[in-house]
Image (cartoon, rainbow, N blue to C red):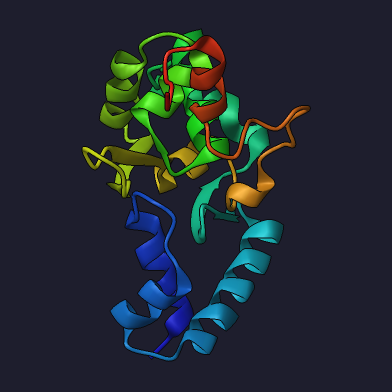
Length: 184
């Protein structure tokens, strides 16, 4: 069995980055053989193809080299999806502070963020990652593989550093400062 050809075929049809473990399971071979095949495929595409193999969002994906992007875009006519400032604000808060509740996001922004959270959930940039162990068991939000893919990140450690850190427990300090919450 030619593992390289199987890997190439799977990556051609994959709609998201494929992890070596998943490729190995699909092909029915050890992970090290898939990793060797990925290395060979990457080298071959680098030297002799308008395509390239990229490592992104914890997996591998075949994509067009940058020098062909303009003609591909003219042909494919992709719809541009823009994120408003409020959506970007919410996305940044969740990305840097995840897991985080809607109330914690609201406390950082100072306004209701439920619309933005729903929009980001619909666009598959955020997902529900659990429930907080607190009264009412509020939903905790986190970013998705789609978020990593769109922002061309391997993982969250590649997020750029922020100038000032937000409080560890988002919202508690700010809510107490505003006098909205009191233990008295």
